[in-house]
Image: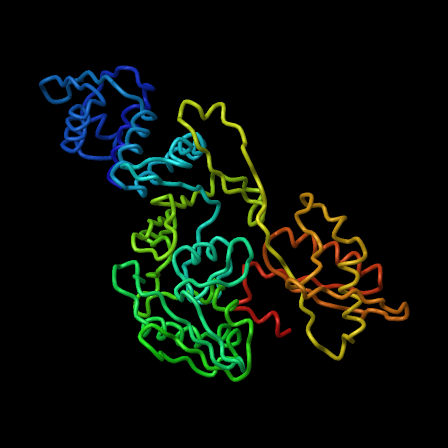
Length: 454
């Protein structure tokens, strides 16, 4: 904030003459800077010592002095930003950038992408929205889910190539022949981000805390109890066999934080700053698996950089530009892509909606060509063929005599591409004699809403 104030004051001195020399009194400068004459003399002295301007005062009260500027506010701002980055004060950079919202992209672009900061390879990513606080269990946003996967580890993890669970905090596990006992054997070199050694009791305590969350309790409904059966072994006892247990434990929502410090984990990166404007991760020196090449990753929350009409669209890009400042005018796109996500429609069981009527709604969505007529980006919304690998969605031959109810209600939430989907479904069902009422819940999850009850 101190840098921002100094730059603001310098701009107030500069603006009346657009940087040309001025003949002016101390009183006029004080009025321009909204401060006392004594304070403006201090500002002039400090700016002159810093090499920003020259001030030649005339003796006598009310006498006019000569003010000459040596640097422009733009070059001064850039120098301040570079100095702040070199000293690790990213927050100051974001505050300084707010002075020129119209030039924000040009201003920040030299500092984005892959950079070396104090001999540390750092990746800075401009992001289009504030990130939600990281909470145990399920998280609504994909960016938050990704962060959780970088900060925390689970007993198991998904292999990047096969997508099957493999060892993480546990180097391997064993299952009893009846499937009711699972023994997870922990690595002996585990450390939390604060340097403490990981104990089986730590993980046991955090697992019990997760099971107190309603959603996680349902996810692990087969678990009877969890015990520390050895200093390096956690044992799950089940009510019934659950051969998806290793998959469930590999999910980000099952990753384990320190039982006393919910933002301290064992993942490849540790969280060092989390504010509304900046999220910074630094590599974990004692990570138990392959260490990342990057030493730091920063999310700079800069909504003005992005297209406002995209709003909460899933098409918002993460823009990373790599190159020298003088090369940015010739920058060209190297690659782009859309990460996979999914949306699903659940049908509430009701006497007003029979089984065949529900199947007809699903068939209309998947088999009528409705998805191919949506006015959104090509291949942005496509029909899926399976809920999970090997669990295909059946195709029913709905009898012609099956008629839809006179009215139905659809409740949906973000992303905004589902507006188009909902409106097209409304028109399609109207042609079938069914009036569809649409209710939009402006959030990423169903928390704090009673819409489902109506």
